[in-house]
Length: 380
Image (cartoon, rainbow, N blue to C red; front, side):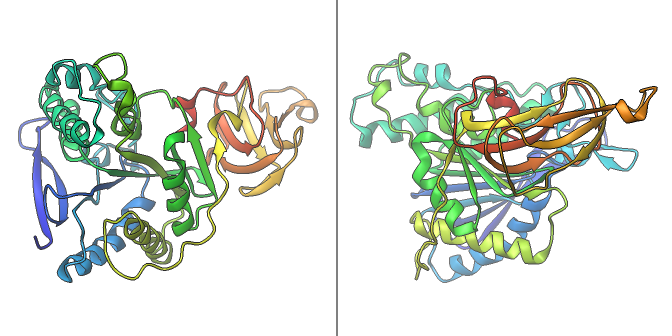
């Protein structure tokens, strides 16, 4: 098919208003591989909007030349609900104001629903079981509640993504190097994406926690064990990742074009686009999520950073000082926040006045940290 643009209506939040998703489709619907990309699930994170703005014309050209293999679905913006949440001129796009919480948490676990449509059994033959599983997942998505506007929106996104071979969910951090989260069994694909996009950090997780969008799409394949016969033998047939494109302010046409080119070459490497593929650059050695030190505060105060994003730090090195602005003696008002590991200080918050218990930085190291924060707090 030629490049097609669909408009999917979403449930109206109130009389006289409407919302919709814009969906770009390339290639042949129903063919393999299927790739799904979206940006700004957290609606206050915009580098992905720029990257997909540059990627869509590249895909349209490839489609016109007949080089799309399978199907590619792109949502240039994933969250019109969050984009509309403006308070005092600022976009409050991380949490739903109607009370359902973080837009990238608590996505549905479709395992039980899919198991029911599979009648509790698979054949043990992946060539038969993978298509059967995808069909069951689509049926399970159709059963999801759409009572609220947020629930309806979630169901529409999953109806587009849940049967894909590749799912790339584009986010960003506050101030950070670009990095990728993906499952350990998808390390090779995660490293390839990092190599083509020039990303230095790949974080491998076993259980991210929090039921993020990428885990909803990829993790479902490993959660079928015990629910259906031969569920343990299912491959993880969906590579899904959270792609963090640096910090919130890292938005430019130059960065967007570079990001889009890297993603395009990754899709070529995955067999989604035909053509002459450049040699893959050297891939970074991945880190395990349990090797990431998340530096948190024990009280509120004013932050003074002592280490910059991308700096190699040592265990015990001071990353920031927390200043108690209510202290009677300002010369004795500072608490040092130190790294628990040797590694790269790859992300930090853009706030400088922080609360108690707030995560203010991340260091990727090479040793397990027993007291690290849970994965749900690490992945964006």
